[in-house]
Image (cartoon, rainbow, N blue to C red; front, top):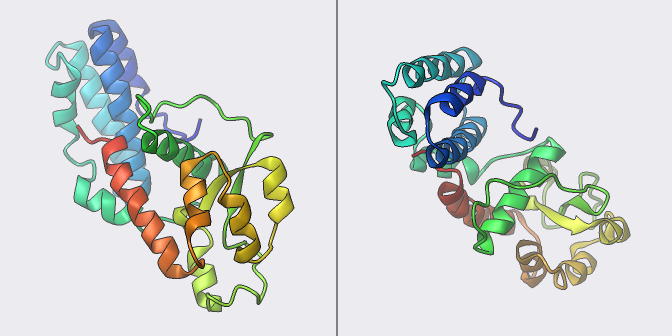
Length: 222
């Protein structure tokens, strides 16, 4: 739903027929990780990814690959930790559903929840996606030049999960007013925004760098 990935279906079907439960679970987790790494870092063209999954599915079916670990070796073209970390640290996410997925997973990981990459469907009627620097920022946001606004508004580090009523209440208000709402959020990654003195490009960079550190651990390559 969130990642809109279909090429993995042949491999999943082959795994369901040939692998044990624990390997199926591990493989599903890895596929999520590969999908996020390709989505963020690039390099996963549809044709290349489809061929990789098709070949791996055949090898699982033929019992040439007998575990999730064996199968992961066939996906060496998935971006490595360094490449993924660098890309995530500057990533922009314009699709709201995908941004909410990333933020939900990152929040769960920061709270040390098990299997954070596997999350239930969220209720967007209760939790909204908040852009700290608003998409329609006024001149009151003096910490950003016009070019910096355009470059940072869709950065994942500028986005947060917030209760619907609170999100509507703060709207496009200046950060000094917004931070009071962030500082009492029960979500730690939203709450931390309220502890920042001012919201600037540097603050977004710093928050997103911490997110990238988590992302490498969550969305694994192997």
